[in-house]
Image (cartoon, rainbow, N blue to C red):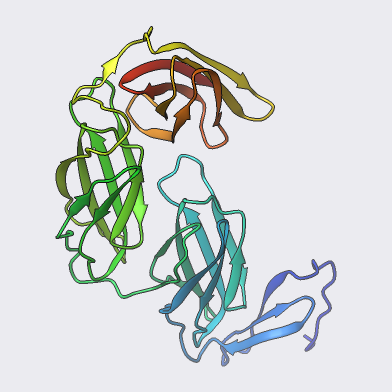
Length: 342
C-alpha cells in the first residue's frame, strides 16, 4: 500500500525492468527500465505512444574478427535486443544482447564467415518490433548499412569470368536491394566431385586454386534484404592459367607415380591433421577436404618441393564424421579418408 519498495540481491551492471500497476483501475501500468549501477534510464507510461522498427543499422569493421554495430534510437523503445548469428555454417555461433545503448562491439568472429544482424526494439508497452536483416562478412574492409527490401529480388546480369593465375575474377552487375550474393563454383566432367560455395557483399569475387583446362560452372544467387532469393544465373568457363596442365577429366590414382606417399597423422591435442606427401619434383599442389556430398570444408593451394614435405589441416570447424582428403599435384590425384570424432 506504500509508494516505495526496496529490492536487494541485484547483479551489478544487470538490466532490469520494473512494472508498477495502479489498483484503482483508472491508470495504466508504468514501466521503468533501469541499470543497477547507473539508476533509472527510461520511464514510459504504457498508455502513450508505440515503438517502431530500427531502420538504420551500420556495421563497421575493426579487424578480421571484430566489428562495431551502430543503430539509431527509436521513440517508444525501452531497450534493444541485438542478435548476431553466423549463417551457412555447421558450427553454430550466436550472440544475443539486451542493451539500452545504440552501439555494440562484437568480438571473436570467424574471418570469412557470413553473419546476420538484427536489432529489435523492445517496446515500453510490451512486445517487440524486429528490424530488417543486415549481413556482413567477417574480415571485410567496407562499412555495411541496412537498406529497404526491394519489391522484387532480381537475378544478376552481366555475369562474366576473367581467367588468371593464381586468381580467377568473377564479376556481375550489382542488383538493387541485394543484401549479399551466394556464389557456387563446380567442376564439370571430373572423376571426383569438386564444389565450393562463397559469399560476397559486392558484385565480384576472386577464387584461387582452379585447375587449368578444367570446365567449371559458376552460379550466382542474390539474397535480398528481407531474406528473399532470386533465381540463379550461371555460365560455364575454362581457366587456361590455373594449376598444372590438367585435362578435362582429372586422373585419379590412389597409387600415383608422381605421389608416392599420402599419409594423414592426426594430432588431437592441437585439433589438426598433418599430411605427409612425397613428390618426385617441384610442383604446384592443392589440398581439398570435403564430405561425401561434395561440400568443401577446407581448401588450400601451394607448392611441394622434391622429396618428403608436410602440410597441416585444421579441424576446429569440422563436425564429427568421415571426410575425403584430396591432394592434387600436377595432373595426379591421391585420395585419403579422415574420421573426425569430437
